[in-house]
Structure formats: C-alpha cells, structure tokens
Picture 1 (cartoon, helix red, strand yellow):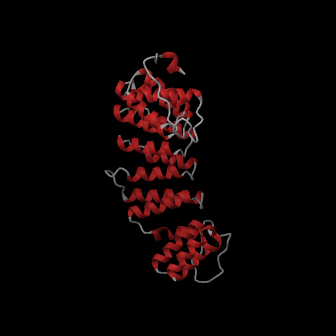
Picture 2 (spheres, one colour):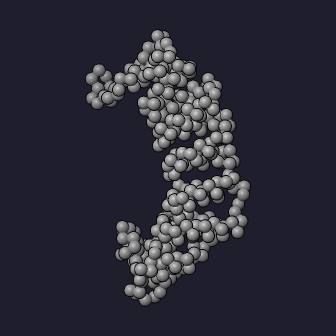
Picture 3 (cartoon, helix red, strand yellow):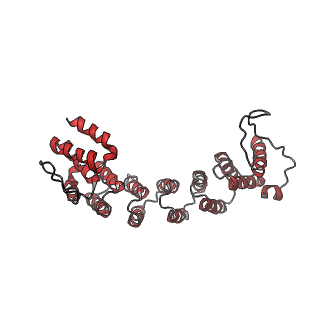
Amino acid sequence: MLYLTKYNWDDVSPIPQDDGGEQPLAPIAYTEDYRVAMEYLRAIMATNECSVRALQLTEDIIMMNPAHYTVWAYRTKIVLRLKTDPKTELKWAALISRRFPKNYQIWNHRQAIVETYKLTEYELPFIEEMLEEDSKNYHVWSYRQWIVKTFNLWDGEVGYTSKMIEEDVRNNSAWNHRYFALFGNESTPLTESQIDTEISFTLNAVEKAPQNISAWNYIRGILRRTGRPLDSIEDFCLKLAPIYTNTENDTDDNEVLSGRAIEVLADIFAHRGDIENAIRAYKLLADEYDSIRENYWNYKIAQLS
C-alpha cells in the first residue's frame, strides 16, 4: 500500500471498526490490507485531516473498494481543501472511470471538481470515449446531461444523439438524451419546421425497428410536448398494423409489423370515441401481440365497455 510506504503514520492511532462488541454476530470478512487502511481512514477523518498522505490513503482504498461513497466524499473534500491541480485529479478520475465504468461515485467526484474549477474543455470528448465502451451507461449519460445544462453546452447535442441512434436504434439512453437536448434549453424553443423534422426522424427510426419501444415512447413524448395530436401519426401506424376496419377476423398476421403500432391506434380510437375499433385493437394486443400484458389490456377494454 503506497500510503504506508510513502508516508509516516506514527502520529496516527488507527481506529478499528466496531462490528458489535468483542464477539460480533456476523463480522464482515475484509482483507487485511483493506481493514488496516480503513482503520487509518477513520482516524484521520476523526481529526478532519486534509493532507497529501490522506489523499494517497483515499486512492489506495478506492482501488480496493471503488464504490465506497464516504471515501470518495472525503477525497473530494481533500482535493478542494489542498487545491490539488484539478487537471491532474480529473486525469486520475478518468483512469478510475475506465477501470470501474459502472461506479457512480466517480462521476459525483468529477462533477465537484469540474463545477469548482469550471473545467469543461475535455469533458464531452471524455464522455464520448466512455460511451464508446458502453453506449448505455446510465451514469455517464446523467453526467453528460449535468454538464450540458450547467455550462450551456447545447450545441451539437442533438446531432450527437443522431449518431448514437444510427449506430443503435434501440439505445434508450440516446433517445432520452435527445429529448433532453431538444427541450432542456428553454431559451431556444423548437420551430414548427424543426418539430416536423424531428417527427420524420423518429418515424424513420420506427420503420427500422417497428417493435422498438424506445422510439415509440419518444414519438408519443414529442407529440405531447409540442401539442400535436396522437392521430397525426395514424396513417403511419396503419401501414405497420392495418387493422382499421369494422369486421372481425380480417387482420393478416403477415401484415402486422408492430404491436406497438396497434397500441397507438387503440389509444387513438379510444380518444376519438370509436369504441368498437378501440376494443378490437386492445383485444388483438391481449390475445396475440402483447399477451404478457393481457390483464392490462383487458382492464382498458373494461374501461370502454
């Protein structure tokens, strides 16, 4: 452990962990290195020590347990108190992020450094690098939203999501960020032309993967947010699911490309007051195209009956 070999700790009395007395019922089986390091950490936290050796100690513990929130919070405190070079700290945090990409504490720490020193130059490129490794990493996307909104970095965000969606049309994280990029900056509302373009983009994506719920949820959200009626995409849905008739047993399975389209059509019919076709669509979902939610669709039918 570098904290022991690089620095003197003779002035520190380690504080053992209290697992519940001399004979604890279920003590945690820590490794010896981790146990000793944590005893030193408790001791320096008790005196609120913010020093270079304390910084090294947090690094060693993080490498053993990268999800230890308290250690990350204490490291942030030390870095800010010592005015450690923020670029050096961000580079170190980047190395940890690559090694432990699913760890959210890293991003909280990074956020504190960036917010304090207003260092944004390398953030979006680094985020893109992380998303190349895992395009659906929730913590990375959350951090991207924070930095875009905090530092007004909206330019290019919609285009970036277009690239991500083209690479994987089912990337729900990219769809979510696209909605954020379009509507998060309230100072630049969308024009009618931009709304039309966005709807076309989404419907094209639906055609690539007609069962992809991400794009269907997105188009519903866009229409609702912009005040466009759901039935504005009725004709499109009918192309994917030609069920709009008043006769029974006339739906050709080979023609139905999307159960999601049937769901939208059912809601359109119900809203319009076309109860017969709405019930028919819900029955198709319950019996054939989304039977896993049969009870839900039967509930929708009961509401109309």
